Length: 395
Image (tube, rainbow, N blue to C red; front, side, top):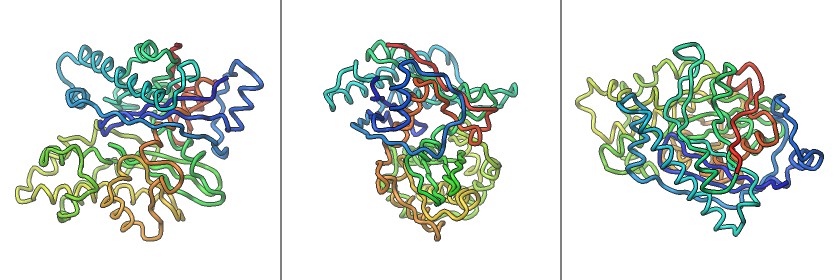
């Protein structure tokens, strides 16, 4: 059976789709499962956080969103008229971009669709409210996996988060066990910080356990402010923020957000950290410059993440940063300034470029589903137990 999987990730930054084609053939667990039984056994036991993943990323493709699609997806994060219709068409458009990314990977590697076991397609999160309203809550990732299967001729695994929420969990983050398999070091506590639109931290503990949770805003507020005041999708390398000054009272007011003080398990999204949240903090600050707001938002992201490292990753000597935030040199400097006893470094220095990590994680999650293995970690999400995640849409 093929051990080639594709992972597709479009995160809350709304910048586009990262796609990877991953070969898991060298993974011992995979070989044992595939060779002993062509039909996967459905084993919802906890994921083994001590097992090392052996994988190779054969190709990476990044496709940006067209501005109209980006604005549509952003608007769907808040209530508005005709949402069902708009969401359905956005899911179709998103799946078309996903299909283009898949074809780009195949073109890069000269592989055929029949050689790919499955695609793990995360979808685009537009609402994330676990445990809310009726005690169960929900999460919504726009996607049309049926259309993607039709467009590519490859089986698709999708809707990874809903089952964990149904089991009482947060549905997020789902990547800490993957981080453990890729970045863990024997007898060392390591932090892995993914800074997308929202930031999430994985703590790979020296004794082999793993915990993880969302820290708070990542790039979402910084990107929003940069677009509003400079017409740019993001602050390249943090150059604009570097020229400003941190506004102390604003920073302290934003750091007092209750979510930032909560104990894990916890997860969040644009449902909380959105333009109106920022506007409420700026309402009585008429004398603050736009560049000082950008500098303060950068410091907010850095401190929200660093505070969680200090609280939950005791003794960590290394913080590995992935996601788009790892490409922001000024943000990385501010993280290092707040963590004097912990080396802050890009995931590139540990063998995987920042923009490949999450997409590779969803290739791995698709593989878990296809093999009938659990994909969540109850200690991370708070779910009642290990669960097989997602649904399979056959080619």
